[in-house]
Length: 258
Image (cartoon, rainbow, N blue to C red; front, side):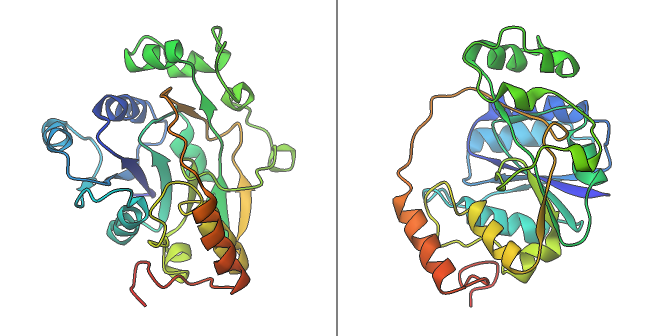
């Protein structure tokens, strides 16, 4: 297997079905799948038990005790059978060449960073219902209400022409397993969404000498519409700033409890 695809989920079976449908359409099929569930939902377990997965698949669960995505991610990192890890969220559907691009551009000391388009309710439902073919999706004829439409076009440009990405997005990134092990994985002190699952590991890995390489308009991702539940981020940002000020590259509450 060339890579491990890690899907972070929480209860949303309909979105997971839509993601799995997009995985069947991938041009690159030589990957391991880890469904990393931040909870132990009975319906999710039943769905996964009856689904016929063509890929080597693991379903990891943990007690539902509030937002503990980073803990779930660390468990997935340890369980991965390959050294290249691709991370997506459980509400993000993939362009047919998504996995191919993340595998094609993998290299030592690199963090691959893609972006996503946020779909409107109508296009999201068409994807869920299987009424939109992903290979035609970049045209987005009905794009009113969509955000970041420019991210939806597959443009196989040479590396030096590619649009840059300043920061990692947790739903569309990949890196080596060794990279995450070198900083003790995701910091489990973050118990609220945002910052902890992408920006925090970004600054720590950059400090270790890794660099960000852009996969914009190559590793394309479609974010299914849902009402945004805004979470106030000042607590996470304050903690992250403290860690940066102390140059704490290796977290204490990570894969190993230091």
